[in-house]
Amino acid sequence: MNNLDGKRITVFGGSGFLGRYVCQALLREGARLRVAGRSAASGLHIKPLGNLGQVQLIAADVRKPASVARAVVGADMVVNLVGSFTDMDAVQHSGARNIAEAAKKAKCEALVHISAIGSDAESASLYGRSKAAGETAVHKAFKGAVILRPSIVFGREDQFINRFAAMIRMLPVVPVIGADTKFQPVFAGDVARAVTAALKNPVAHSGQILDLAGPEIFTMRGLNIWIANAIGRSPIFIDVPGFAAQALAVTTGWLPGAPITSDQYKMLAYDNVADKDREGLAAFGIQPTSLDTVAHDWLDIYRKHGRFGGQAAA
Image (tube, rainbow, N blue to C red; front, side, top):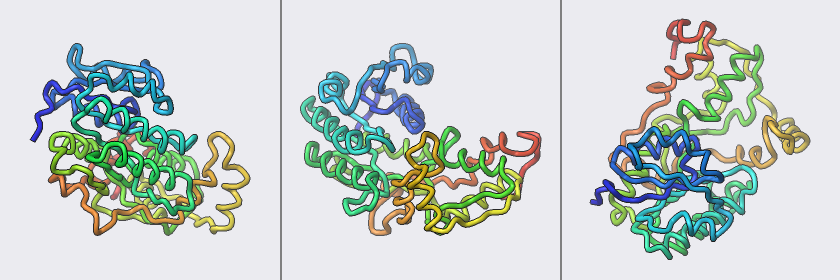
């Protein structure tokens, strides 16, 4: 098993929500990180997580092969966390290929690529198809790459649980789109531990695709109810009929900040849960963290009296 102490690891997308957790986990192992983002300044908040000189920031655009190649020069290992709901094929397919080809050319020891459980070449959504194309491109360029497919990732800074919590706090009546669609949310810290474990033992997981999911399965309606209970709110939940949700996505989905895009609506046609026949966190010896274990702490801000509002029922 590899010791990551002193290893130089390039982390594409290391400045994002999941990147913060991954970088922190790798820094604890003594790795030297090169955090690659669209701008070097985007990773400034990662610097204090490491010791002096342990974190290097570099600008890199995954859509530009020369930019990617510069970011992996001298790297021992590479992690790709980059994902997008815009320019999806360029980022999640071509960008993933650029990273894998650069890692191979640089003779890196290991590559961990973050995909998504919704990855499917036959998906109605471009997101799912672009993720699947990225997986194929990665394994073609770097056969030993470990591909991790998380479900919806939650954590203090996420844009999923927090988004619904904010809506539930503000609205007496909350519309629920895709009410019966199932999710298996996974804690960002567990995904970070899986990335670290895959890099520490790349031979054991060489070429594998693993689904990363939490211990609980929620419907969209059930998840909203759980959040409401957790923050002590009791709105009325109204399931939005499919035809109405589709009309909303088509007519407003192109607007900035739209409640749902056309592609996101198509994604809701599929459950986002782990494949029972595919290995997951257990392959790394990781016990999945439940939403209830960690979410109550950061959800304080959505309670009626903030963190002084008392513990809501789970």
